[in-house]
Length: 245
Ligand code: E4P
Image (tube, rainbow, N blue to C red; front, side, top):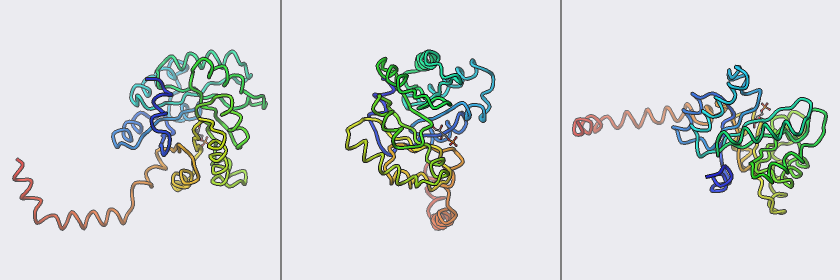
């Protein structure tokens, strides 16, 4: 099963985890809450994957196996904007697992477009997650060149003074209208509320750090209510436990 086949089965309402921490991935996988994982060089470094290229390869393969057939994004890098280097990295990363998709920044740090890289990888049937995008125009162009995922960094968009939900609504409308099959990854989440807010706005996928997922789950009033149910079940629970021994 390829990465693309897997992700096309279910296209909307998907929750990805923005982490390279195996313990967090395992936890949310077991909880049935994880649809995929996104990483980037900063996440890898922050999460302790610092042993050079072999460490990146090792952790990537480990995560890919752990979450299979769910997709995993791994990011390419070339500070000089060397296209051949990006292509070679992408080919190598994608060979590590059929559920791996390759992140390519939409432009280089000097603003040169990487749309040719995205188009070439798409031609080679390598799934691309076009990343570090801050505008609908960038996402639209990445989708046009064949990116399977378009990652818009909505937390950063908000920091620039734009309404992230409004941008997402427009982007979703544009993709639906043009029939481009790219899936919107709402990235760069900053608050727990972003998950619902961005799904409601039209993101197919929201990627969150494990820290932001915790407040989406735990609620003091839920705890209190469960304690009430547990207390009132006391009159039959012991009898049931004795009966199943
Ligand atoms: C995910 O794909 C992105 O790389 C990530 O959400 C970026 O988050 P940041 O804006 O906190 O760096």
